[in-house]
Image 1 (tube, protein in one colour):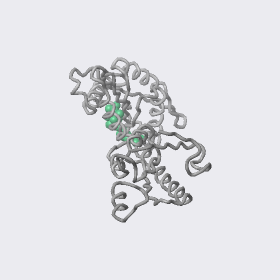
Image 2 (cartoon, rainbow, N blue to C red; image 1 turned 180 degrees about the vertical axis):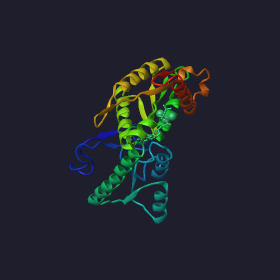
Image 3 (cartoon, rainbow, N blue to C red; image 1 turned 45 degrees about the horizontal axis):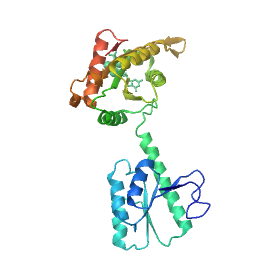
Image 4 (cartoon, helix red, strand yellow; image 1 turned 60 degrees about the horizontal axis):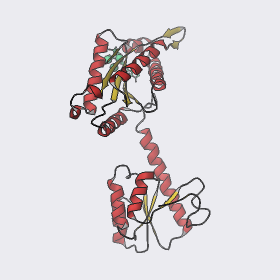
Length: 289
Ligand code: GH3
Ligand code: MG
Ligand code: MG
Ligand code: MG
């Protein structure tokens, strides 16, 4: 593997400053480098020693983490059938050797533009528009991933479900836009009080879910209590009035699961939801674990 930062075989001006250009000798190196660095673009020579470019491209496109990376083929022999095969495998473009440097650069820029749009849309699709928190789809993905990565011996993963208390009357009395401001304020507090490793989501209307990594149910209940206490102190101004809200929180920890096999995302969500229901039953504005 040869990482080059500012000069490549296309002369001093390429790749532009700040880009990292990695050169792999063969398919094995190429696949490893791609997994390690998740580049924004792959220039793939069809004619390589060992595994050929088509096979490597197929490997890229079979890996969910690598699928979004655009692949441009470089090749000397490109009949129509090969072009079709390359596009069908997921390549975004091709360049025939000997290639014109200016044209190749333009194709690279175009592919990178597409990749940037893709990344932007992927991010937007995961974010809740009102609060800027992660959305429910992202929560489900992350929860499944966290659980599949948990070691059998280490079930330190917790989930907290947070629900604003008696929110409907607040909305009915003061209007939906004011209700939205409260949802944003609560979201901000949850975000402030969580750690970088936590995943804070808006689960739905006035409900939030937080994945707490490396956290036992006890640890999660301490964090949840801190959040509950902080939210109680917030006040939302509306004209001359100041409105306060409280939240109820249900906490579920992986460590409460006796059978590791029973610990799934759904099971953790259900357990947290059950604890939340219990918190509401006990009179709201409290944490139940
Ligand atoms: P509880 O303590 O049992 O949770 O009572 P609640 O009134 O909060 O419960 P309920 O689930 O009956 O009401 C939730 C309300 O949240 C209903 C709706 O008016 C409000 N809501 C849901 N989504 C939004 C939203 O995006 N914006 C605003 N402003 N209000 C919302
Ligand atoms: Mg409710
Ligand atoms: Mg509620
Ligand atoms: Mg609710």
